[in-house]
Image 1 (cartoon, rainbow, N blue to C red):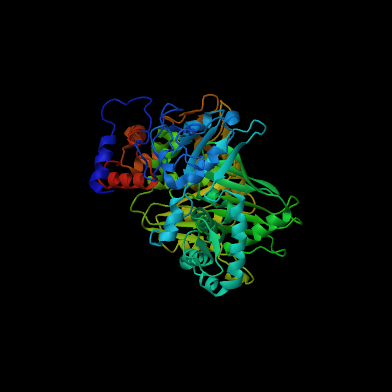
Image 2: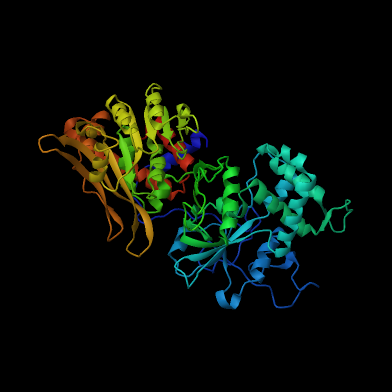
Length: 626
């Protein structure tokens, strides 16, 4: 984004004139045909984002094989179906339409679909990830084939169904793939050794496949497998999915709406979906042997092989997702298991979180002032409550010129600032002296003169160093496992962190996150409270803190009990911003001012994490946020 355009959007968002109550984000603009070839359909289906899938006419116009030619088949009776997505229509033709009805098609899933009690829809995800620099035509052809997802209601289960529609449907493909695998072992071992280079692997695999197979009707090679063009395309997809990707769970990795993938043992794989919550996939492991075999291959692909002696592995996938593997039924009685916590290449912005109801514009305006002025902040909550997501989102509010050092066990944070040092711990392996711990990295960070230190999670002795950093003037942010301010203080002052109680008030701000059940029964993540730590009282051995914002569970709204009644905002932050003591309550006008800017930016569709950071940076540079 050019600075001029950024500043224009900031100025448009400034709170001049009356606020439009109840305004929402702009819906994505629809065109007659999407970039990947999916035509626009019947908008009367279930709102502006839905396209009704129409079945082919009974017999009229069918070709000799009984199917309509691809160029004549339609979504809404007028728009042609993309010819290269024939596997989608084979799947639809096989559905029991009388039982489940005809699915709706969505190019983008709106959040409102999560409120629906009956689900029957299809949406696309990418088949494979293709590096931008790669120009191999065969890989590009595979990438053109889309994988589709069918989500449907399961009346017999609390979780709805999640089916993947891949360009490899049909039992004959699996038989052909087994023959291809045998040929690879027998005749192409030397070629496969070259495939150890990740940058060459996909190309070499497809070259081997082309040597093994020949298309019917073309000049055949001696001893080659005779396959149809459709079968060759399916084999290419499976070759890249299984040997360059992660096998049959690769579509789950590529689905941007999935947050967690969970295999709990023999049986089905379960997922947590951003829109639909918990779903049950059609991917399953029927035996312990099949599951063990897959887990071993998976661990080898990520470079951390599991063994009977070392059955537990924590690692990071190439896309940044976190994976935990437990191998063998001696430690996992239902069989080996694994859990993948997905990594989003573009993190959620604070405006995305506001739109989802996690916090309010006023809360974001308040946090932006506190973070910008270097207040030490902890985001605290239970496991999977959204702590890291929120910490990452509010990092946008750190001064754009700041030097930032982040320290993590597993790299999850995505800080938008250019002057960012990203450090991660290193395991010891067999040589314990080679280990690099959070404690080591935090001590090193103090010598790097950062303006802000971000700690992925404080668990142990590194907490004491973090509080020493706070005392010496280094602003710190971190996540922490505690469900309330009281429990947070108990953990800080107890083993193994052992912060002296008089030092705890170096922590300024505590944001409590939680996964909650809303009044309508849905599960969601909410900021339960934002609290200012004021002081420690040695006389009665207690801490004073002010609850500035509070979530109202009965209405799913946020109260502002700290309005005109804060300590740090009025005294510390107002003073840093040059507001005279007698006028310190003018700082609340700045909270509202920033909330209004964020509201206007959201109404204009500016929600992308990096775009928001660029706009706020330009606004800060021009003095519009001072």
